[in-house]
Image (cartoon, rainbow, N blue to C red; front, side, top):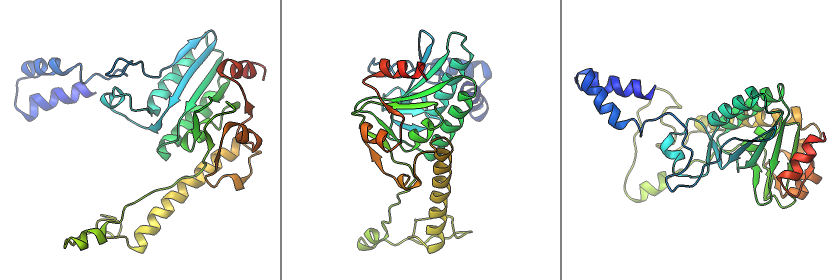
Amino acid sequence: MKTQFINKLVSQSWNIPRARGRALLASMVLKLRDERPAESKYGDPLPKLSIMGDVAHIPITGALALNLPDWIKEYGLSLTDINDIEQELSQALNDPRVATIVLDFDSPGGWSIAGNKLFDLVEAAAQRKPVFAWCADGADLCSAAYQGAAPARMILAGRYALAVGCIGTYLTVLDDTEFWKQLGVTWEVFRSGELKGMGDDGWSEAQKKFLQDTVDTFGARFRGNVSRFRTSLPTAEMEGQYYGGEEAAQRLFIDGTSADLAGAIAKFRGL
């Protein structure tokens, strides 16, 4: 799709013959490729699906997002595009060698919408093959990432996992109107609706309510999704708390601990 768009852009918008447009396009194709990069610009391998015997190992690292451009991924900024995870889950589900899928998390969370999609993907995958979740020592399984792990048949973590849980959503906005006033700058916003241009000239009560309602909607879906699968987790623990691996197990965020991934997989097999 990228190449088609650029071909139209250079041939139509600039009134360049198609043949010449294709020549220009050819020189750009490496930068415009749709393939997911295998390594960063610095030569470091990027997290990706691997098949270990009959186990599909899918790492989910860093902040969760959607539709990340390839050039962003190439910088190795510890981001995960859930669309990539969707492709990897599909590959694992359709590979006859794979009997078990393990999602290996080290993520503080990310976009609520990305967490919602990951939850739906894992829930659907778990109906076809056993899906398990793992969080190693020093790693995170928080917020949107925890939501994505919730449908897994079992969730294990290292005793020294850094943070597990953090159920809920939030939105931070910057009100810099007083700063600009001190500089002698004021804003006049002409809007066709009360919610257009929110924050440009401060925050009205209607605008604040809209944002709070949005956060509440995503938060309610998050808690509802978790409650469907983590039935023993008290609702009182769904206020943003997070714990290290051992305490997370005691508080029923996860099903137990393991020394390492190999030990976790052995426990998964025994379920």
